[in-house]
Image (cartoon, rainbow, N blue to C red; front, side, top):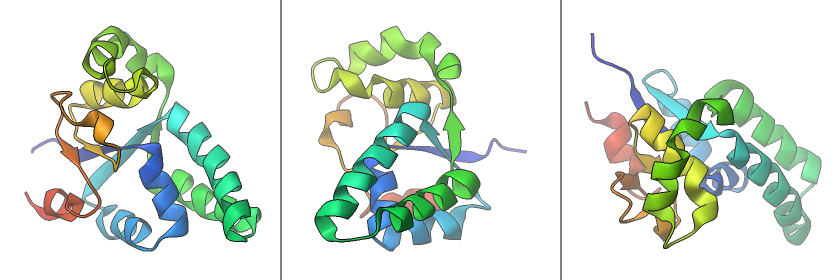
Amino acid sequence: MSAPKRVVLDANILIRGVFGERVLGLLKAYEDRVEFHTPDVCLEDAYKHARSISGRRGVDPALAETVLNEIFCGLIQIVERNLYEEFEQRARARIASRDADDWPIVATALLLNAPIWTEDQDFFGTGIATWTSSKIELYLRDG
């Protein structure tokens, strides 16, 4: 039996899951075949940004939080720092020239040997497969 297909989500994808339809639809469509993961820091970032974006868009922040809760409680596995921190040095070396604050996402991808789903171009060139929302379904459905 082969290992399950996995993907690591960046915080910007989580936010798209709140304010758009495509990301949430893909998460639900593939939840039985793909393991979706995100580092704990993306959880914090997603809640923080969802509140501020809600205010700018005139959306009830409680509604945005409800959608995030749905995503985090049933669709995505949160990876705690104590699991990915052993990859910190390698992750920082790969992302340092771009955005060093993104090292937990790179470290989680290294830990899980999984690609990253993001809209952030800082991950390109890190040596980890990177998928954008426009192409992620190719990865999710294949194999």
